[in-house]
Image (cartoon, rainbow, N blue to C red; front, side, top):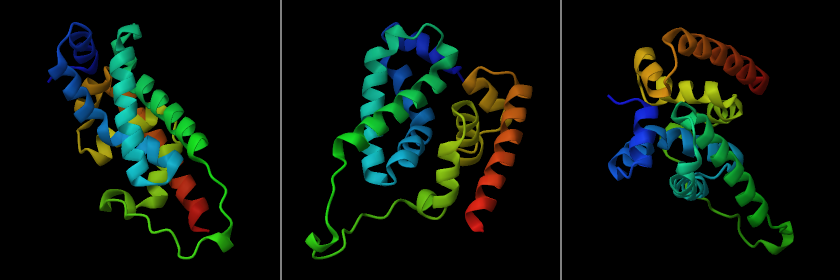
Length: 174
């Protein structure tokens, strides 16, 4: 399995299949990041797609391929905030005849809305390892390879993230 840095370098050299692999690896993390800002799954999917397009266009500016994940999630959060500001509309409760029906999010988000919000609030470096490890099911060693980090760093980030998530979820459940 190629590292993220190798995939970034290959993409910068014109290998579109390498970018497709980056999309597969980061898709859930990007959607989760957008969803944590927007709280709407379908809008988060749209923003995620936009974020990947922007990332592809700007990838030539990325000097260190090892930082791709953090860079992409930062770009996604910025795009989600921009989108939420652009589409923010004030609506009087009296002007709405029926409640707006939003399509339900898929089970992996809908069943754990509080957890998804808490993950979205993690620092990017922790969010990235949590998504790879817990949502995508990669081993700690695979996460280390995907993120180009030492395995000790990954396990420490996972441990810290779990503590933060527990604290956040305890506050929510009170």
